[in-house]
Image (cartoon, rainbow, N blue to C red):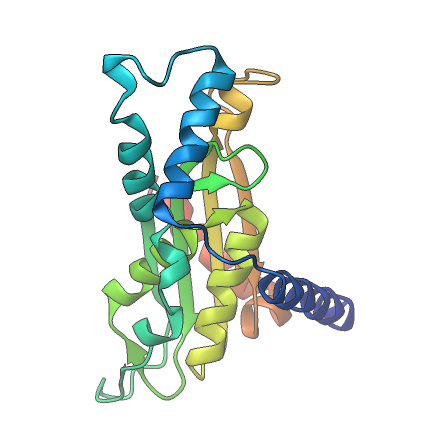
Length: 214
């Protein structure tokens, strides 16, 4: 089973590398604003009317904030490790980290919470850095599945842990605002490495601690 998961992870990583290699040249701000004007006109409104004159500029500025993760290096958040923790080797769990991301299929928001746990081996990372990792990846065009895998991959790659566990719970507005229009539907994804993958009791402990917070 582990071999199958590993092959899937390698294929996912290769796909991400290929996507990054094919990334187009970033348009200018003027080109981005012109694209917004085109979409306003396509939607059926007049981009030259008073209420919409500044909308292209505002939308482009909002995109800079909503998709700031493309300009951030997640490894920098995990560069500093604290090893003076009096020999602590047990579970570290940060739960209910709120985030807002955008579905890469419709650029519609999905909103939820991430829960991250790991077993340290050589030290621990600042708790706020785990929240920053979530934000870095969430502020990109995403799928929830990829977001889960990327968070685990970043932590696993930077820290010499004995295992990492991530659960994400989110509501996707691409389901609630359009299409099937089902409000209140929650999607749950999980990703495990190390002892969380190889020892079912560790997954149980992780999930029990999350349920205890409800």
